[in-house]
Amino acid sequence: MPGILAAVASELDGAKASLWLRGLDGLRRAWGVAGDETTSAAVDHHLRIGDADPGDGVVVARLLAGRQELGAISARPGRTLSGEDQLFLSAVADMLAPALRDAEYAHRLESEVSARTREIEAQRRFTEKIIDSLPVGLYVIDRAYRIQAWNRKRETGIQGVSREEAIGRTIFDILHRQPAELLRS
Image (tube, rainbow, N blue to C red):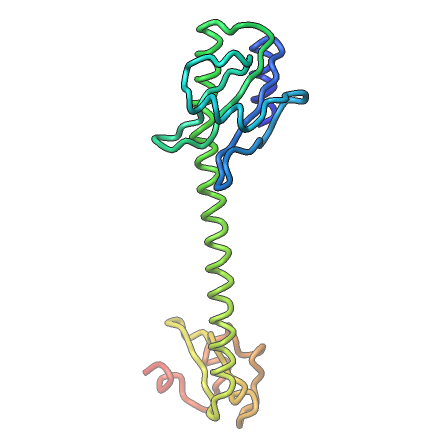
């Protein structure tokens, strides 16, 4: 983002530029070129009045992704901007808004996946504790006859095979007392 703002500043003859994002608590400066003294109140005022010029030397372009207003790019040029300059600023805002929206969605998705992963891990540990506390030996195999779970009672049972030794191996590698044909049925 700083590179984009530097490009905006350069294109607008050294204008001071900032990127503002709208949050629950209003607008906040996300990035800015050094020396930009524009306030969130000034940017908010420009967004409310639209294209009208309040005479404060600040130019604002909305960051819109569909109907969602994400914030704005503000610039404080040292001169009056031409229509071409204003079009340039709007074009930068139009290109930047979807990328910012997608970044926010990705951040939310990452947070949701992280929370769900923690929840699943907690449920897995809880289930494992229950299985380990059963008074009978229990093991779980998948369709390839690989052992996926092996409780503590199986470790201390007749064969005394440790969980670490059993998990991931086929049931035929571990349980030798039963014929393979019987175990497959």
